[in-house]
Image 1 (tube, one colour):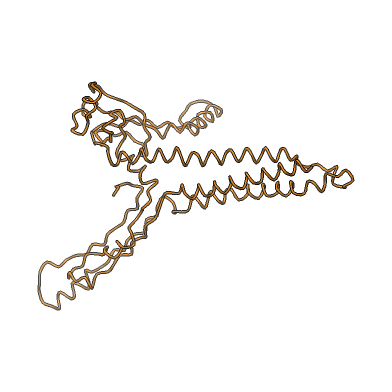
Image 2 (cartoon, rainbow, N blue to C red):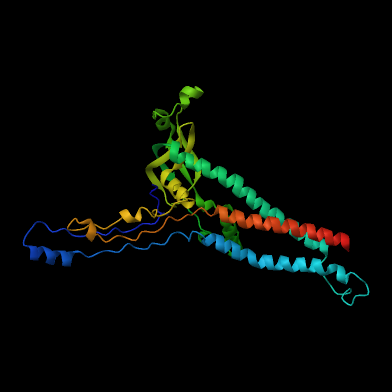
Length: 311
């Protein structure tokens, strides 16, 4: 498993075992007094498995209501196109503006779906390669967090730095430093033999970090075929946990999780109620919502074009 702080941590019940056999009455008394269970703590996950999907869906509902209203305006437009209609002189939204709005939103949701299907998929496959193929060496992680409030100056300068920090997300990145000679000396690395180049010197590169503090002599994951691909190990574990498909224990595993018993009888064990297997991979739900919006906007745009021709 991945020892990630993002994964739920649970307390296992521990009981005291009497030292030796005395009298049967004394053993029973000690069993009754010392067999105190510590319940498994319900530590919440980063978010509910479907929490972000539900939030994303609820955020799009007001937009859906507005676009349905636009669709109604397009539907009602031929009835008021007649100059003899009393509503002809009233202000109304042009059909071309509605069409442009639909098409612009269609481009946004199409970009989101392409981003999830292509970029996120490629990134996750690359991230999982570190889990399966990477070697471990020692290196340092440099991090210097900057806050907009610590900047001297007036409000406009502070606001500028705040916007820059938010847009660039520079506080999410640090620098990893390690010796390339350590990579070359690893038995799994054949880069020098394959490329006929020697690996020497210290490399410093910018990486995404989840733990925002400097570290020295920590584990660095490096792909043997790419000696310049170093990433901090615990940050990679946090990244794996962020899109893990299995969080918690499987339902079959809960029957095997029990507290320690002082008398050793399995029949007297108090079984711990461990959680079901949960998923943090929410990309499928976002893809379904995006696919619905693409289908709706595409059909609505075709209908508006039809109404423009009819008018």
